[in-house]
Structure formats: structure tokens, C-alpha cells
Length: 112
Image (cartoon, rainbow, N blue to C red; front, side, top):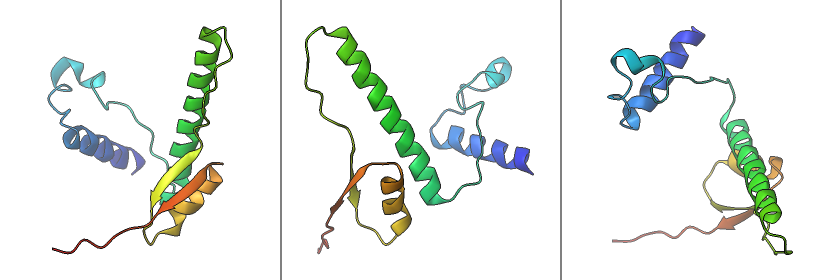
């Protein structure tokens, strides 16, 4: 059941991103979205994992930039997430769980 679900998800990614033509024939095993990992996590946990990964990548990039320059440069912290308030608190909790600051943007009703 897990393999079937993973293959369906990868197929949806390929078709949704328009990558289905590159993975046909001999290159199907090495084409775009040919490998993946399916984790049974909820929305909040998946957001926390993604945000933690982005946070760690930003830190590595900042450290590499500091090593390239011999002078002390002031690199701003990348620890703020702008969140358009929706009625799902799990996303807000995910931002906090990832160790980031959340700035809630108010929404405006668009009238036509």
C-alpha cells in the first residue's frame, strides 16, 4: 500500500509540474521526480520539517558567505515567517516549533 501511494504521489508531482515527458522510456528511472519519500505526518509537522530545512540551509549559506569574505559583514537573520492568517493554527504552531518568529499579516476583504 505504501509503494502504491508513493508512486501515485510521484506521478501527481510529475504531471502537476509538467515533468511527465522527461521520464519516459530509458530515462524513466533517472527522470525528474523519480525518487521520493512518503512520510505519514500531518500538515503542521510537514510545515515544521520544511521550515526547519529552509532555516538550516539559510544558515549554511550565511556561513559560506562569511567564510568567502575576510571582512566582518553583517548578515541579517533569516528567522521571520510572514503568515497570512487563515483558520488553521497548525501552521502557526509549526513556525514556532521550527524556532522561527511569525508575523501575522492581516487579511483584507476584497469587494467587487
